[in-house]
Image (cartoon, rainbow, N blue to C red; front, side):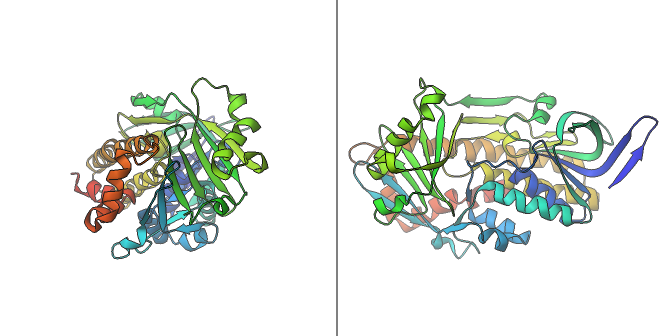
Length: 408
């Protein structure tokens, strides 16, 4: 990295600028720096955002983190979850699936339950320790201007406007991406009418269920929920009434009602976090805009059922950083390689992530007094070794990576 001084301003120079200090941006920046590529990561907040929504890392993502040499450290602050359950709240039926069955294709046949900010903070700290990597907080991208040779990015700091000149700009700056908006690309899809409520508690919910797994999808015709275990908390995700006000959804009364249905007496459950958020199913019209590349939530959004959002974003930048290495270090054809990144990852976002997360939500909503048609299908699948394996490969995201590789 270098500084170029003009007549009136100093322009910082780097090969790749990554916007966004979440897990997707952090993986992108750290991998590029490990490859020997000068990389600057900028994040608008004073630290990596402490977002409690994403906490599941799938087996192929764990393979990638092992390749980066950081999985061991992450395991120390996460929980392994080899099995997960589909439960019917009314009938009590439980369908268990075990990722251990994929041990022949995966070095890490389990989910790791670990809040996304732990990964982001681990990698941004390590990035700063590399000779050609740098993390810069309180830096918000305002706009960019690109030409045939690079991208000039204007960045707001607490005290001034900085300018960084980069060969490439990766936009991993989230759902409200400033960079995506400046590309002018569409962001087609829809927003669910209901919002989702996430509650975190240290209360031992497992005492109220027989053999509760670390990951549980609980279907119900009135109010489905997801129960996820992370090291310090149980996280509970529920949909909300579209007509309800924020103050009511975040109230003790609502908290009590949610936990009444889980442990019998919600009033005795104390929560550490209560977060309300909208959920979208959207994909950008293009991920490749000259020297500006979109990834993660800046490129696609989906509901959280299945844990595909953060993982698919990491898979985006794994593909993208491989291509940037080939372009920057080995003189690969940039237009050809980055166009293929767009085709591969945008196709997967549309054909796998969007369709599968919508299907997962439909199944959660379908619970009745007995088994729904979806649950009957899933139970039959779980009893069939061939179909069960295919399902596990799909839900673990190995199949989507295989499909990606087949896209020319």
